[in-house]
Image 1: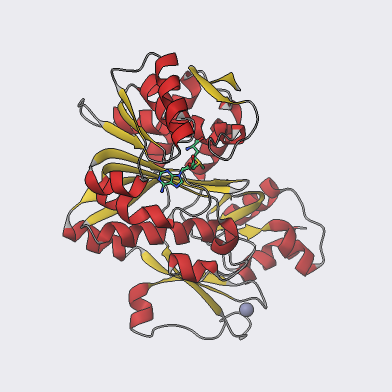
Image 2: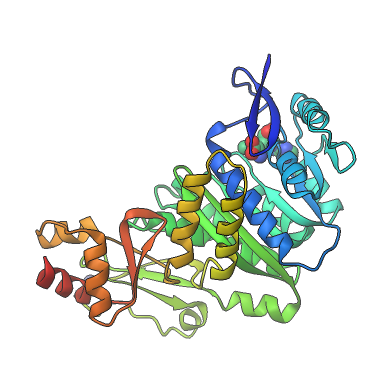
Length: 374
Ligand SMILES: C[S@@+](CC[C@H](N)C(=O)[O-])C[C@H]1O[C@@H](n2cnc3c(N)ncnc32)[C@H](O)[C@@H]1O
Ligand SMILES: [Zn+2]
């Protein structure tokens, strides 16, 4: 009924056939490998102290068991499914983690509302929204959240507004917009408890978004974090885009027309408009990935290396889409990045898309450079 797999240095029993009551997705090993390096990097940045971690929606328990075994934290692993809970206990035994690790068979929200944990991991089916309030009340130091409901978050249907209190737009950079809408929602949920978010590493792959964020205490810090929320304006006519803060919105300092082509602009948000990663933290995660035994090491290192150098600009541009609009064949992306930099702009790749770039040049400036260089 079960077979044994190995992730990192951890042995895990998983169902041989997918079942409704015990969930295991081998494709998320990449995410778990990055988590292990991320949690290890975070822990090593703190003075030595006992830390508690909860894997609140655990399935087989693979995340929590890996954190106990590969990072050495004291871990709570929870799933409301009874067969999953029983398998978590077997996986704890298999890895001889009885001293540091305890399984629970509760509703995650009840456990989170009743207990504080230093590190809280929320990895649900679909949207994390039903668990965010309790997670934000429980967490003391580090919050890790997955979202797989990328369709509503990306503007493909109306769920963005309903679930996240934010309006997405279906643009070419919708994956980044989704990540920032999720971060915006977590910012507001933490603020209720006088806690503030500091995103350390936020990324998206295939069908999921993952955020790893430090949590800081204090009303002033929470107030400051709200200032990092804002909106993105997008012109669907020429591709111009720009961000503005919530206070600009409240003071009605908002442009209604595109300053490049005079067409009407559309607005997405509220969402997180400041940096979604800390460069030094990403470098430490990269180092951790490099020295560990991990199944998805190469892919994980590539994503994190791109995050290290990614500009902190809240949107990106698809190179091919702009070239198509200009009716010119696309050159290589590195050629365009060099051309932007030699014209005095900042430019970088983005982990969100292999064919996209970030820059502080405006769309008309980008088009001028492409027209000259191609
Ligand atoms: C996506 S799976 C978890 C996957 C796991 N974290 C991993 O990395 O393999 C979500 C899990 O949440 C559990 N679950 C759903 N609602 C829950 C709730 N309210 N409280 C506790 N567990 C819940 C499900 O039984 C399922 O095992
Ligand atoms: Zn325009």
